[in-house]
Image 1 (spheres, rainbow, N blue to C red):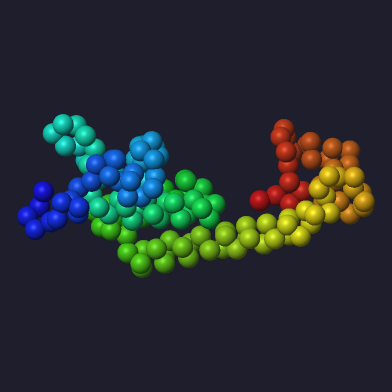
Image 2: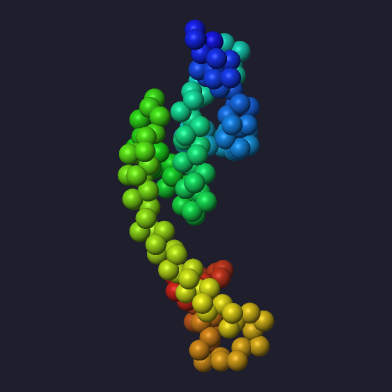
Length: 153
């Protein structure tokens, strides 16, 4: 332990400590590390040890995931940050600006879906001509297997 560093604020954190502090499971931390989102070093006993900046990186990952940003995009964004420096408010502002347009589009699409959805539930469709889910003659089947949106992402 570093001189002058209280025991509750160790320089390095175990995977269990990171999990408790971040509210993320140990398995999720291992997954993030395998994907290159976070990094650890190994101690003499071959146990993972994380620097404290990992807590902010995990927070960024969780906030981005909650907004629906794919993990691959999060990884790409985090790769632009210096590994040994705690992400700053300026870093977050830059990352969030990149995601804002996609989020605005997603919000617009979800708002339109919400506004149309109550007319479709239970589908004893009262207006087959105006139904946004209508797919006469399986026109969407030409796009391949699986469900297809009439308004693609």
